[in-house]
Every structure is written in C-alpha cells, then in structure tokens.
Image (cartoon, rainbow, N blue to C red; front, side, top):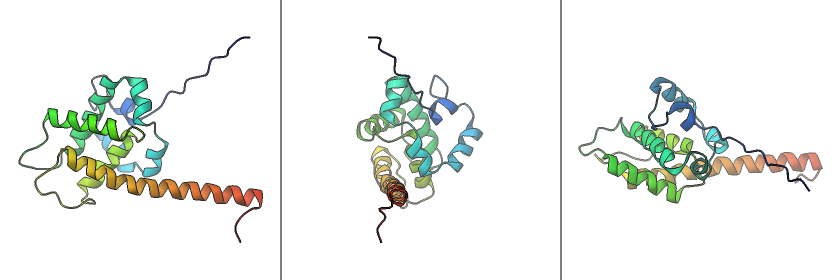
Length: 165
C-alpha cells in the first residue's frame, strides 16, 4: 500500500516577511505599518512559536524575536535599557512560557505597553515587565478568542436549528 505524503503547510508570519536571515528588521517603515494595522484577530491566525521553532530553527527564531523586542522597547527612554543579554533572556523566557502564542502577540503587547495600556513606566523596561505585559495582553486575546468561538457556535446552532430561545 502506497503512503501518500502529507503536504506541509508553510506558516507565514511577520518574522519571515520583515526580517532577514540574521533576524534584523529589513524595512522599518513596512514593519511599523504592519504593527499599526495588526489586530488580535491577526495574531490568532498567525503561526505560533512552537510551529515557527520547528520551521525556522530555534536560533533563527531567537534572532527574530530579539529584533521585535529591541524595536518594541526602543521608544522607552530609561536610565538602564535592556542589554543584549537581557533581551535574549526575555526571548527564551517567552519561548518557554508562551509557545502556543505568536510573534504577532508579542508585537501587539509591546505596542500596547508603549501606549501605556499596562500602566506607567517608572524608568524600567525589562524581561519581567514584558512577561507581565504579555500576561495582561493574553487576557484580552483570549476574550477575543472566546467571542469568536461563541459566535461560531451560535452560527452553527442556527444552521442546525438548535439555537437557544
């Protein structure tokens, strides 16, 4: 019996669109435009960090997430900015704790942090700050996901004629 090959789906993400092999953002204006228009629904549809680790390799993904964090925190004028070591540590913390989430989630989280949605910055942006912001952001993301699931269930119930009175 012949075994058919399962086609592999190539995940598309900002990471492969706006970063090069070294993980550097190649077109800052295009990246910022993408960031400006990015929504939680976009993040829900993007490939997660586990998928991207498998596709790109961990070292390549780390470089790209490093660029996202470095760009995301560049607007903060703090006395002691994050060092390369700090950012890489934060990237590995994110990979370890948030593998089912996406780079787009990280981008939205950092954007919201810059907008002050997670409180004031008291001369400190570091790994624990970013992890805290991610947790707050994910609460919002999961509310959107729950709404999507409820809407899909209601639509299916309507089709099947089993909607609640």
